Image 1: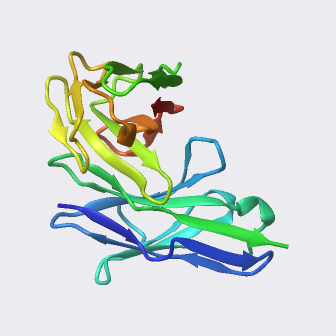
Image 2: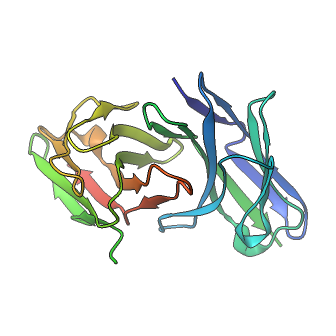
Length: 114
Length: 113
């Protein structure tokens, strides 16, 4: 069975500071990995995804994530955040082939303060 | 191209009533999913369907039933609604190929009183 753990439920940072949102997963098979962002009262928007190839994945809005197979992690980073990055971020994992199950973490609420 | 369409968008139910949330996608996707989102709990998978005619339980299936009668539609039914089922429900679909982009519906806000 797959599972996703987002290690921080809330992350407060100051504007222009770097940020890392942590995500660890568990799976018995190879997986695809995703990060989604949800702004207040809106749906989910894809930030980036890892399917194969380079372990460093670049996404929208200056975010990037690194897939580390040995540590089963897929942490999201941004070198300098803006007020507008305040949102909830979700990590998700889907099995490659097989059951097609898609599971999300509980989310990390990022608050960027001036 | 409408993407993933969920209906209704808002619904208030009395405890014990039944209702069906409808989801349809026009992208010829294989896999479809139903999630519920509650504060601090993220998105929890209720049921999913890897293909037409097949369904599987997710993390929180109790109190729900689903139906995937054709490739396009995947409905979620609450047979006897309970206040604990008050939540925002999201339908999603995905093409089982390269890209693996997940498409979400806009959500259905359900309140059970």
